[in-house]
Image 1 (cartoon, protein in one colour):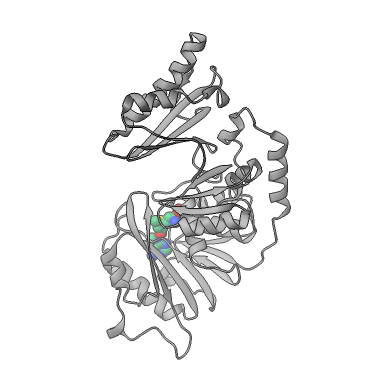
Image 2: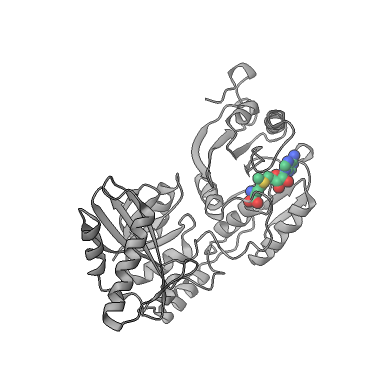
Length: 386
Ligand SMILES: C[S@@+](CC[C@H](N)C(=O)[O-])C[C@H]1O[C@@H](n2cnc3c(N)ncnc32)[C@H](O)[C@@H]1O
């Protein structure tokens, strides 16, 4: 069957690669999504094992509609009893890129009307709408006059892994965190560190990746469990198979934060993720930290002066740059920030620069290669952020 995994901006290629490794076929990158083909088992695996997907949709209809009446009739013509019972609840989400249908909320409402009318005409009763955690989530996407109708196999977004029991002021989305680890090209070897770990998202996502732990193994509910054709035995097998593929990983994964509260919260989240003993966390300011000798991989998400304020953000980033230069020779250092001026203050040459979004904030995920010995970072005059 045809499936569609949705993701965040910038992770389409990473997600396509994850799907390739799961054995999906006919993989096609789209905008913030990847289309693919697979069977029911693959759909279960996608929900359990994909690190960069936020949900997995199953397209059920594709048609052309020239006006609202035609749209309503064609939605109503779908046999909705295949997907839900009258006692179950429903929610509809719509996205439109169309002159004919330019009001997505109205399209969602029309869709809901068509579905409940189908039930009402048959049974004189209608299913209820429930926005949060409905039995059936219906997704409409309209491009010009082309309508795609999908149903959601995921339910609550896949970034809700189930390990975040303690949060901080500006945590990173788990899917964004996992994607950053994958984009960094970390080969699971040698030290991985996050010196400003907050609630520990990057560390936990890195450790799950290193141990081959499925990111959503803690979740107890997915929308596909509400479906009529839910195969509990197959789901059990999929979970067991993933469990059998978990591996030992002994290279160090280490985090620091200047705030003791963050260190404690990271420890709680590590415990909830079942990773106690696999990640080390300590309290220390980045400027004072004496890191293990390189090579190593450093990934960090410092304050941007948006949600977390800094007294002098440019000076703070300048200190980050100086510290990297002084103490991190042999490291590959990645940093994400929405503050472009502050990134410039780091004063080091970036070897990669990727646009990502942290929520609504457009960010750059930048890489600095801190060469050892003679191949040092370029001299001050050449150090630029292009
Ligand atoms: C944006 S938060 C990181 C959030 C984290 N990625 C997560 O998912 O929870 C930035 C963190 O940097 C820490 N921090 C700020 N300045 C620091 C410094 N000089 N040294 C170490 N940690 C610092 C803050 O305490 C905060 O927890």
